[in-house]
Length: 163
Image 1 (spheres, rainbow, N blue to C red):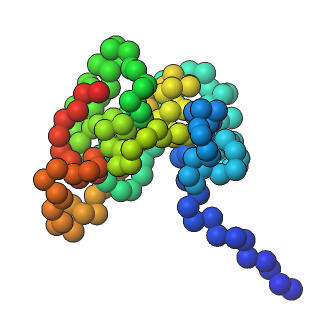
Image 2 (image 1 turned 180 degrees about the vertical axis):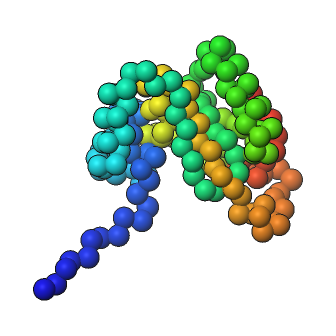
């Protein structure tokens, strides 16, 4: 018997498969899947969130960068001052506990333009939950690689931002 091997799914970013900003996107977000919520893992997350109206926070952990990321994702996404203060307080505590810089995803972006379909956009912007993406470590820092004095991305920065 021959067992067919599935096509590789490298490049599929489940973090972009959530239904955030897709209607406004000029094209499908890169690596997001064929449509919002197309992947069974994301369908399960969306179903779990819908069944739990008492959720107030969302944290996901990734493994690249050594930073704590929060909304907003883009320039044109205002954040109420009260929410910003909560994020600043949590971010300062997270920095003290981990040594990682806390910053908005917007400040991290390393490519110009609008970012569509991301986790923070869905959890904060559409579900109303305080949400964070914690990148657990920095391979560059672990390898002793010094970043440029003015990094083009927040991955290498230690500056405080308050957007």
